[in-house]
Structures are given as structure tokens and as C-alpha cells.
Image (tube, rainbow, N blue to C red; front, side):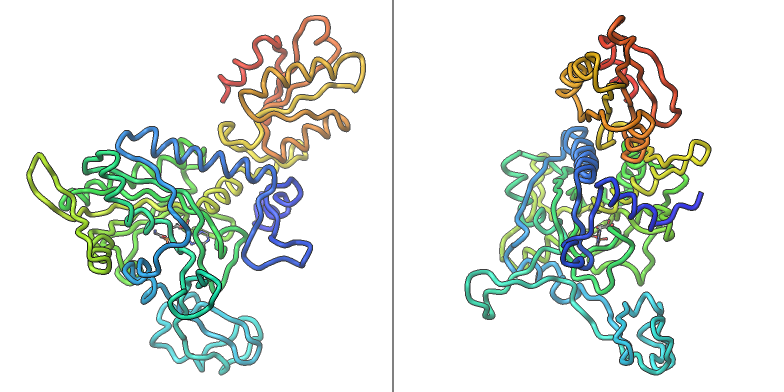
Length: 440
Ligand code: GAP
């Protein structure tokens, strides 16, 4: 099967998962809008993550901090000084590149010998310049120095600056975690591969505050848990997941140790989540810049320390792309495209189809809708042949198809179709809800 990103993009548009932003104006680069199925799927992924973090772990609580924060936070975090990408331009055709993507040794090579991938000329590349990725804005009506603020480039800092308030309010004891899901913004030089790298995206981050000395062990535990999340909770194919450890020259300015969880996308292995040992770097910097004591008091041992932080940082949009890419299946034998989502995260769980628009079949189908609707997302469809209706739902990834036919009127039974096998079982309407629950 030839699974390309173009085919996934096309299906996403056709079925209402994802649209390019500002479509009627010709689009807006590197921003995407989520359609009716896309938002259901995205919500299901983020709710699964939220439940896994804050419900399955008694010592992890959630917050929702602002996108705009005190600008000093970004000086303390190192983002004002160090959150840069090296940028090179072709003077001939104005093509723009991230220097590190053209050459790992971008600082030492001779750029006048580099060929432009766009226009093919050599000798026109500029020397690399550093480009800060943060979006700047102004708070208040006057644009002057002193009113500058940034759109947050990561949700993590909102957790660090609230950590003592959360710890005090909830009487948390180290080790404990704080989770957050929210938007982040980065002025990426080159955004590409659909929703993989965009300028506006969502992160699902959990910051785990631990006693120094226990950090290495705890990082190992989180690595395992986060890897298994993709297999057990999102249903991702295990052989398409792997770890990549950051080497010395890849480590972010805050990290002592860092691992990426990578997925094998149609465009190659790429990062979907980072697991980092950030040590006490962030809290120490916030102490310096705010002048506040951010140590934690460990009562039983009567000692104070700055906790180390183990971070798990996943991109929600990249999680979504992973789920889409993994689910895409061309069933050539049956001439159909199927999105084989794990039923738990499918945008729609079942479609209810009366075989015809008459003879009382729509009325019974509506009754079935009323039984199922309070429990999960269901669709009613009476348009077109039953084959076409199922084809539409296979592309939408709906795991169950329910058909109401003339026999239904006699014995109160319907057919229940499995999306992947296409097998149809006859089942009593009274057992439908529990049967779907069991299969999920
Ligand atoms: N707080 C740590 C942090 O932000 P990161 O590796 O820069 O670390 C974490 O980002 C995750 O956020 C990535 O693994 C990725 O899933 C997502 N992410 C980062 N930049 C992104 C972008 N431009 N578009 C979509 N997702 C992005």
C-alpha cells in the first residue's frame, strides 16, 4: 500500500477532519483548522491523555495557565536568548532554509559552495543568522517598549511559575506532577508536513517534580509509561514507534537528558513527544529573575530543596497526525479506504441507517439513535445506497454500522457491521448498547 501524506491530506479535507486555515483567502501558511470529525478525534486524544495523567495518577493535578504571561518569564526560561533557529536565504530566488536541515555542520561549512535546492544555483546562499522563534505582541493600546509580550512557545513555563501555588493549595508531596493542555506558538522558519510542524499548535505537557537524586530512575519510568500510552491507549502500531536519545549537540539548553518518542510517518521517522530531565534549571532561573524562594520543604526529612523536573511533552496535533497516519488503510480487496481508529478514540462510534426512507424504518432508526446518543457520538444517515453510506463511514473511521431493515420491524433486531472485517451480525435492539460497549 502506498500511504502518502498527500492521500491523508486529501482524505482529511474530503471527510471534514482538517482544512487549511483561511481557505477562501487562498490559505494561511502553517495554520490549520479542525473540522467536525477532526475536533472529535482531537478531543478524544486529549481527553485520553488527560484521564491517563490526572485520573490514573493520584499525585498529578491539572492547571490551565494563560497564553500571555509576564515577559520576564521568557528571559528566565532562556527563550529570549536561546530559542533560535539558524536561517539561510538564497539571494537569487529568496528560498529560505533552516541551516541545520541543510547541513549538520552549518557553522563550519563554506556556504558559498552550497547549492540552493529550489533554483539549483550555487554561490547565492547567505551566512546563517539566528532567528528567534517567539511571536511578539503588545499588551495595551500603545506599541512601545515595555508593553511587549510573547505568545508562549511552550506550556511548561505556566506550570513552573504556578508550581508553589498548586503545591500549597493541593498539599502535594514530592514527587508530584502538574499537567496542562494548551496552545503554543512558534514562528517556525519552515513549516511543513501538514500538521506536523505548524506555527500554532497544542501541547499536552506534564511536569513531574522530584527529589534530586531520584530523577534518573523516575525519567526511566516515565519513558516506559509514555511509550506504552501510544500502543495501549491510542492503538498505534508498536513497530512504528521508537526512542531516539538526544546527543550532546541536540540537547536543549535546559536538559540533562532527553529522549524523543518517534513515529514512522510516510515522510520518515519524526518526533511526537519529548521526555526530558530539566533538572532544577527552570526553578533556579525563576528564583533568580523573580527574587522568590521556590524551594520545597520536605517535612518528614526536615529539608529544603529545589525539585528536579522530569517533563513529558507531547504535541496534540502530532498525536493526531500519528493516529491518522497509523489508521489509514487502503483495503484494495474491497475497493475502499478505511480509517482503522481504535474504537475508543474514533470521532463517531456508530452510524444508524434505515434501509429505506419508508415503511416505519426511519422511526425505528430514530428510536435507536435516542438509545445510543446519551452514551457516545452517533450519526443518522439515510442518504444513498447502504454500500455508499458504509463507504463514507469507513473513511470517517466509524467502527460500527447499524442497519434497520424490514426484519427489524418483526423481531426488533438490526444488523451490526464491523468496520474492519465488514462482518454483519444480527442483534436485538435491546442488546445493542452493551454489545457496542463490549466491543470498544
Ligand atoms: N516543553 C518542552 C518542549 O516544548 P519541544 O521538544 O520543543 O519541547 C514538545 O516540544 C513537543 O511539542 C514536540 O514533541 C512536538 O510534538 C510538539 N511541537 C513542537 N513544535 C511544534 C510545531 N511547530 N508544530 C507542532 N507540534 C510541535
